[in-house]
Image 1: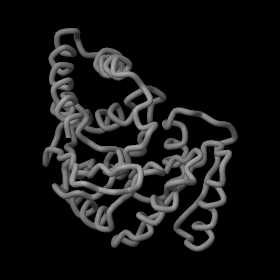
Image 2 (image 1 turned 180 degrees about the vertical axis):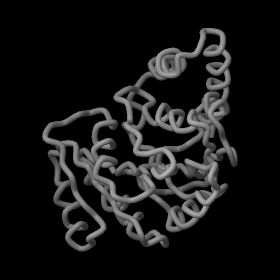
Image 3 (image 1 turned 120 degrees about the vertical axis):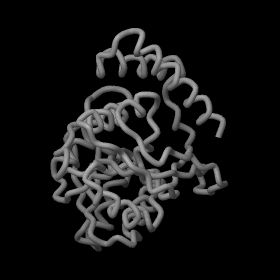
Image 4 (image 1 turned 135 degrees about the horizontal axis):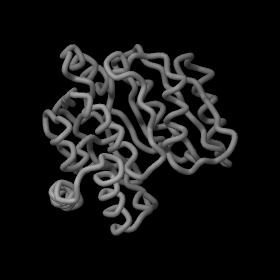
Length: 242
């Protein structure tokens, strides 16, 4: 859980992990040089629950890749999952996801998720994902909500997240590129908070980042990049209308 000046929503995010029906977890909260009382709040939860640790960067990084990588480096468990400090997991998330890894082909498990407003009110605005995905399918657009994704380090090792835009998309692609598949629980397991600052980049920048994924990260040809880019644009439009 990367954290930077997250005191407004942090408690809810932490409690959503504490309330998991699956009990064998650890929560690594990685502070990116917060100047509010986020660290104090996180430390209060850590003092009450030994499964929670608070780690700190020496200086602010800004990009989410560094605190996530720092957390992954210190993680002791087999499965790696991500949760931003303003989002929430629903109680059955991990208990529904972990059993799907019994399939030796599955290296990633993900789920549907629901949007909520800044006050935490959910209005059935659900983002549905396909039940299964492979590398070529995922190239058409990132259907793995990062707050729902989990991967198996026994199968793929610990993945270093690149310091680029759309870093989570590139991470999931790097796993599926090894020949594994991703599978969905086909349930809603998390709530994504829409805040005033949720969209910090222009649409044109986001489109450019996607093109860079195809051409620079995946090194696809121009025609193949264009094919996947068109598919991505259609999916992005449908998702935005929800």
